[in-house]
Structures are given as structure tokens and as C-alpha cells.
Image 1 (cartoon, helix red, strand yellow):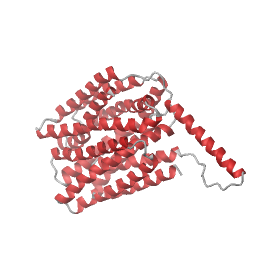
Image 2 (tube, helix red, strand yellow):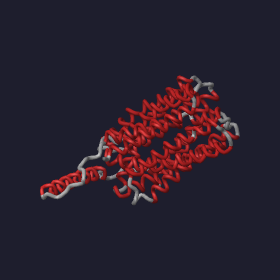
Image 3 (cartoon, rainbow, N blue to C red):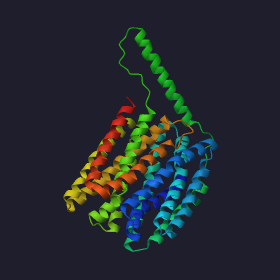
Image 4 (cartoon, rainbow, N blue to C red):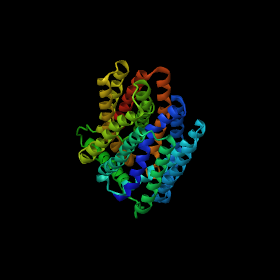
Length: 399
């Protein structure tokens, strides 16, 4: 899996930026939480149509490598411009462009994994990819912790992230190859259609013979599945967008320690990917998704305790909660990625990322708005309710 080196370097940059950007806008540039939310929301909204666009183009041309290289090149150049910008509205424009080019490699990457490997290996392959790239994200957070300890300027850190994407471009140029044949997703679609027809004939045959029929012949609802994804993404974004500022401003945690806290979340996600990959052969994706969404709901509600009674013990629980949220996300992502490659037809490979992006866009703004105007306890309460709604959708889509 040498072709993953470039993606690992890219994730190092974005792992660092995930915590650094909110602190940079509110601390260095003197912006507000609302402006952080507007920046993140604008980036996610812009990414939605481009998720479809890049996914359609890559499937149409079958040149997945080209769009991966374009993505890394675009982000390297735009992050360099980001480091030179001090006006917040210009910063938002550049950040939106970064998000647009970021999406250029997402759908092609998912297609490459699904075409390099057979359906039986999808969960394990997605888990291996996510685990390795999560190591990159984790290293990015560690780098952020180290760089902030030395008090290096925001401009230097952003240029460093730009350089990581440039290295990702170089490695991907030499290691990423387009598949010779693109047919695995089409075979899976045919198999599902044949299986549905076979079950229909079997039920009809038993009914005509006067036998009792207990099986329900119903196809999985793509729209309800996408609705569950949308609400889950919105809740996740509402929780995590203002969270660095919550730890920094509300709990008085230093910037370097904020990076340290998010290391635990990323480490949890890494453990989730590894465990999901190890149990890929026996995992029931639909059941796993429902369970981890419920777990996330409970964990979001539990964070209210840190706002009511802050102490070393509640801060320790926040660390544990962040880690468990990460573990749950690892299982969730692997299961929904594999299910989406079954449900979403060829030519619409970007739909998964578009839905995640749309939910993230709405959540970025709503999360910062609720935190700024109604406080973090209200935010954590609403996020927990949204995870419950997501659970209901995932339970309904396959029934």
C-alpha cells in the first residue's frame, strides 16, 4: 500500500489545521466563534456540489490519479496563500477554495479502494486506509503540540502544512496508479439485484404453495440512509467545530494542551479502524452503525458534566469521552463507507462525501451559534438529540 504515503502526509497537515485554525482565527486574528463557524460552514457548503462534480468527472474519465494529484497541488498552493492573508473575509475565501480542492481526491480515493479489492475485502481495505491516514492525523496533532510549545508563528505552521501537501503530491505522482479495469462496484450492484429477485421468487413460491411467509421483501432505502448520514455529520460538526475553543476559553486549557486532548480523540479513531479491520469478516455494518450512533449520543450528553462541575476528574472524563467518540467514529466510517459503495450507483461516487459535507456545513454554523449564544451545555444536549435522530434513520432504512 505504498500509494497511501501521500494521503498520510496530507492527513498530517489537516490534523494539525483542524485544531490550529479555530485557535488562529480567535486568538491571532481576534475573530469570534461565529466567524469560525461561518468559515467552516462556507467551506463545507462549497464542498458539497464539488463532491458530486469531482466524483462524476473521475468516474466519467476513469482518471482517478489525475484528480488526486490535482487535489494535493491545489491545497499546497492555497495554503501558501492562506499564510499570507490577515483579513478574515479573504481568509474565508481561501479556506473555501482549500475545501473545494480537498474534495477532489475523496471520491477517487474511495473508488480506487473499491476497485483494487473485492467486495469481501472492502471493510478490511477501508479500515487499513483509515487507520494509516489516522496515524498521519495523529502525527499532525502531535506536531501542532510541539510547534505551539516552541511558540512558532501561525504563518510558519500554515506554510509547514502547505509543504506537507506538496510532499503528498510528489509521493502520489510516483505511487498512485489507475486500475486497469473498473467493474467491481458494477458486479456488486448486479449481485444485489439478483439476490433481491431470488428472494422475491422464493417468497412467491412459498406463498403459492400455501406455506407461511415471514420474510419481508423490501429494498434498502438509499434516501433514508443518506438522511441518517446527513444528521450524523451535522451533529459531529456541531460538536467538534467549537470544541477547541471550549477547552481553551471555557476550561482554561493552554493551546498546546488542546492539541494533546485531541490526540486522544484521534488515537481512539485509530483504535476503532484497527478493531473494525480485524473484525471485518464478522461485522454486520447495519447493526454496528446503529450501536455507535447511540454511544455517541450518550458521550455527547456526558460532556455537560464538564460545564457544570469542572475539576481534574471531569477533565479526565472529557479525555475518555473524546477517545471513545473516536473509537465509535472508526467503526461508523468503515461500515458506512462500505454500505455506501453498495447503495450509491456508479457515476455518483461523490454523493457520500457531498452528504457528509452538507451536514458538516450546517453543523459548523449551528454549533458555533449555539455555543456563542446559549452556551456549551445547550450545545451538548442538542448534539445528543441529533445522534438519536440519526439512529432512528439508520434503523429505518433497512427495515
